[in-house]
Image (cartoon, rainbow, N blue to C red):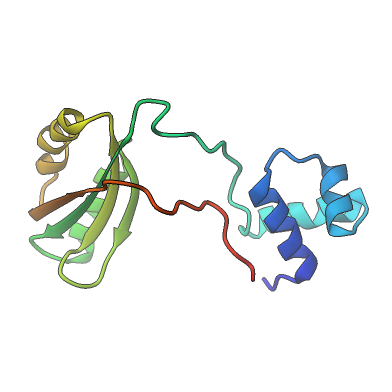
Length: 153
């Protein structure tokens, strides 16, 4: 679905503040409330807007550790890939999972309270998923950039 300049303005405003009122949003993008709401509903129906969420500070809630985990499978058949994807989708510690090209098959971002919590996740969950040949963990020392909003520039 093609997005025009007003759609992009609406998306930028919603990414900045998902709780903005329809009247304030309409005013900021130069529409009246009804057409603005109609555009939002269309973008929701078309899958452009996939949901609304609160951004939570992971340090304040006690999950300050970010671990990037490269996983290599023993085989890369469609079945094995799908089984791994289903298994990690069920793990609440896994915040992101990407199917990759290169030396590993998947890249995960895992959050944990501390090193011991990550070790428990690794031993009790990740290593028990069938078909894994190799796991390599890298611990983030500092988050330099974190964005949730896409740029429409």
